Length: 258
Picture (cartoon, rainbow, N blue to C red):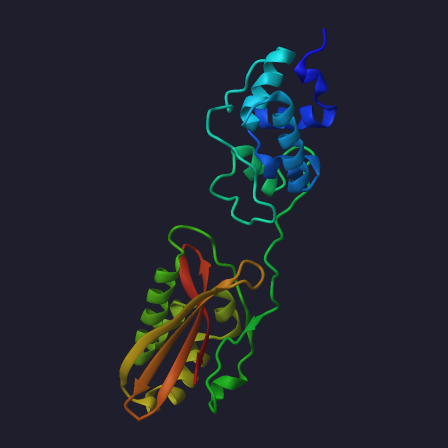
């Protein structure tokens, strides 16, 4: 005996079966390698043939006809048709769709493009018109994406480092630097050039945070923190401190004052 469901094409049934598994139109399109427009057309044709107003109801009708057990993910929440070309699928995506975005679903190609890594070499020390400019550059080290390694913590670490320099506490400021910085610069060298460069500026009068941003440099990026500062010698300087997450703390890997 012919039923209304027999009027559905195999492609329409294939799309409805994905709806049963918790997909919406956008994730179904990703799974099938089709455009969202094509999937929406299939769903609209299926609803029209079955005389229902929702894609979920059409999927339930197919389920009842084929005698399969309904998946737990099938609820009463309306799916609707995905907006074509929309980039706002994040909050409404199902768990299956999120796996597809990261290329974890079976048979799905990776769709997330990684951040383009920029080639970067941080200056270990560079102060304009000073002996520090002759020191070798230190490559950036990684910043871990952990709860402790946030931008606010990086800013605090950068300001604490500058305070140590303000107070001529060279050994303590050197201890706050990263391992690659220390490989290129000994404590003696750091102390020698810092004593020649920092004291002439005089007491710091003001220091205000102006920039705190993540720089996606290999291997995992670093945090760049900038302050606008004024000194007793009458000059205004921009202090740029680069930090990488290392051994559970933010470590300074570069400093520019100018």
